[in-house]
Every structure is written in structure tokens, then in C-alpha cells.
Length: 345
Ligand code: NAD
Ligand code: UD1
Image (cartoon, rainbow, N blue to C red; front, top):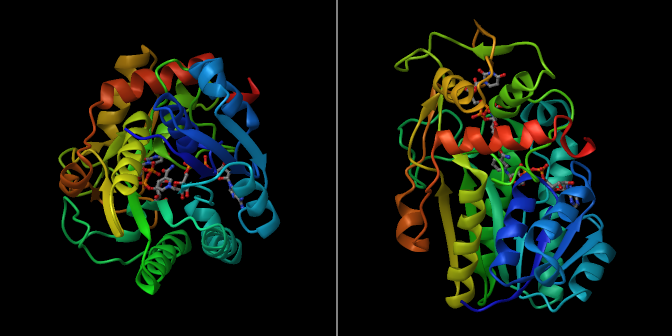
């Protein structure tokens, strides 16, 4: 495979840090642009440690904001960038309801600034972090990429808006190679336990809440709804190991860099659903810790079941997930146990 100079926005975050590791191991040279709004430089220091000195020499970090053209120019100047992987953004659904303008600013205006900088620096190859959240309440499961886009919260609307912007840009002139990757539920950690997910405050998502209960940072888990139309009554999701997701980015980049003009829109999921109660059981098994929990009322805005149809990504990228729920729990637990307070540990 050919190697390239890549700009990784938001590369210090949860998915970004794991993807940086996989891209460095594949031989690519990286400039990470991150303002550390929701991450710590420590994640990239650990990535450098994990890949070793030779590969780490191909990692540069620029502290800056995707909404600032000077910061973007500095990042592009740090290497002759051939493609961008764009993770930077805000992702908390509840926060997006309370502060919609901030979400439109960072996620949409920030992506617009990034695209303008790409044009100025003659770079037209982009992988964008989209989300299954834009399917809202899916009408059919498993969900295909052709399913209606019907977000139900401001966060989802910003992801849909950026996808729309990318379609318009791709149609405006020749030369664009773009992949919008719609992630399902990324969980787990690198198997070393050195890097992982480090949410600030009380986790909104199931998996980090479970790991924090297991390590003693939280007392009990609330299971949101026991009366969903699912086999055991709890909500069903398509959990994807973050290392599988990182490898999906490598595969997408490879296809874009080796191909002509294209605009790909792909689900990245496993195609398998697991209920909340199944995740709890698997985590208890992997960790040997009890996860005390109570079944409570449904959470507003939740769907009963979201599961990807991942066949298009398999066909176009030659990529599929290889790690199951037991590995997600094992690796997520290794990270949480070694870093009970995340990167601040
Ligand atoms: P994260 O918060 O861990 O990472 C995002 C990174 O972007 C952080 O390092 C943060 O500091 C940085 N950032 C935020 N605003 C910035 C700005 N203005 N300028 C520069 N950097 C900025 O989140 P993540 O889980 O790694 O998610 C990465 C991307 O994937 C996001 O765009 C998110 O919306 C998307 N996504 C995440 C999930 C998920 O469940 N984690 C699911 C679907 C899509
Ligand atoms: C949530 C967001 C979604 C976002 C995704 C990834 C909502 C409504 N949806 O998806 O937009 O793209 O995170 O960041 O916020 N659960 C519990 N107890 C908890 C937490 C969750 O039972 O404490 C259940 C949920 O009801 C759901 C499952 O666990 O059935 C997964 O929840 P979560 O991890 O928050 O992901 P999503 O709801 O799929």
C-alpha cells in the first residue's frame, strides 16, 4: 500500500487516537490538529509510545481549532497533506439540545472552514466522521445507507448538514474523493489498555458508564427501558470495537487514495445487535466484577433497535469487523482498570 501525508483533525480523541495508531503502523505520516476541547495530549503521547520511536517520528501535533484558518494553515504547512481524516467535533446529544449554536458552529462551520482550507491547499481527499444518529428512529433494521435521513436532535442535524455540504462540494468540481463513514456504537479500547475512551463528567453512553461502575467510580447503572419490543426488553445496538473502526478508516483511505473521484457513504458497524442486558452480562464475564443495575423508564429520544447493514462497506472497502462483544469488554476493561480516572490517572 502507498503511504501518504495525512491531516487528522480531532486525532487526540477516542476514535482519533486509535486511528492514529493504526495509520502510523501502516506507515503513514500524520499531522494531528486538535484543540483538546474534549481530550488530552496524553493520548497521543501514549500512541507514540505504543508505535515506537521510528513510527512516532512520523507524528506531529498542532494545537489549534478547525474554525481558525490560521490554525488550519499551520497544520497544512506542517506537512504536504494529501488527505484529511476529520474527527474533530462535538458529540454529546443532550448538550447539543441545550447548546445548538455551539454544535452548529464547531461541527458545521468548523467543517466548512476545513473544506475551505483543503481547497486553498489543493487537497481534495477526505474521510468524514458521520454517525448512525442521522437515521433517527429507523424504519427498518438492519439499516442500509439508503434509509431516510431523519435526525431527531441537533447533533444529528449537524452530521446530516455536513454530509449534505460534502455532496455539494463533490458535485461542484472534479477531483474530490470523499468518504462519509456512519459509525454505529464505537466501544472498547486498544488491547494494550494504554489508550481508550475518557469521557469528561458523567458518561452519557452505556459502555463507559458500565466500565466506571466496574471500577468503582459509579455505584449503579440504570437500564433505560425494559419494555422495548426486543427479545429481552432492553435496547439493542450495533457495538463496534474501536480497533475495527480504526481499521475501517485505513481501508477507506486506501480506497480513496488509490481511486478516482468518488463520494462514498458507508455504514461502519458489525451487523450484529446486542441488548443492554447482554452487554452487562458480557462485561461481568470479562471483568469478573458485578455491575449492579436497575431497569428504569425509557430514555427520551432512544430507538428500540439500531443495527447496521455493513455489506456496502464490505463490498467497497473489503473491510468488515473481526472483534466481538467479548473482546470489546475485555479491552475496555483493561483500559479502565489500568486508568481508573482516564488519562488523568
Ligand atoms: P472525541 O470527543 O473523543 O474526539 C473529538 C476530538 O475533536 C477531541 O480530541 C476534541 O478535543 C477535538 N475537537 C473538538 N472540537 C474541536 C475544534 N473546534 N478544533 C479542533 N479539535 C476539536 O470524540 P470521538 O468519540 O473520538 O468522535 C470522533 C468523531 O466521530 C466526532 O466527529 C463524532 O461526532 C463522531 N462519532 C462518534 C461516535 C461515538 O460514539 N464516539 C459515533 C458516531 C460518530
Ligand atoms: C447515543 C446517541 C447517539 C450517538 C451515540 C454515540 C442518544 C439518544 N443517542 O446513541 O445520537 O450517535 O450515542 O455517541 O443519546 N443505556 C442504558 N443506560 C445508560 C446509557 C445507555 O440503558 O446509562 C442504553 C440506551 O438506552 C441504549 C444503549 O444503552 O439502548 C446504548 O446507549 P448509548 O451508548 O447512549 O448509545 P445510543 O443511544 O445508541
